[in-house]
Length: 127
Image (cartoon, rainbow, N blue to C red; front, side, top):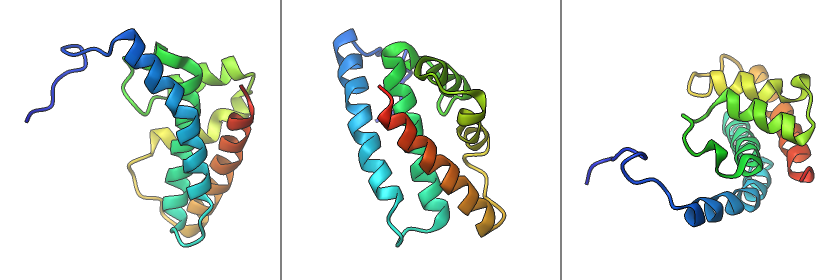
């Protein structure tokens, strides 16, 4: 089996809407998991980011289908639609830019976790 381009097999409009509608409930599950103390701080920060990003994708519905993920543009566009300020969405944008790099210290992980957890909670409350 090989990986194929999304452009070779684009989702139908119905499939895209079904996927988008599943994102908010999944973000809620991620938010719950992010608060499990048995997970490392880095894992909780990652899960909090994923919850935030799923909320952003849900907000954009199928408009984000063609984006490379994680995309700071997705977060910025969703923030505008949700009425969030640049300051509120910045922790997620910063995390998206360094998502696959190691955090240097537990303090960095703790700060990222706290900021992203708060943002995910805000985004889940906003419809």
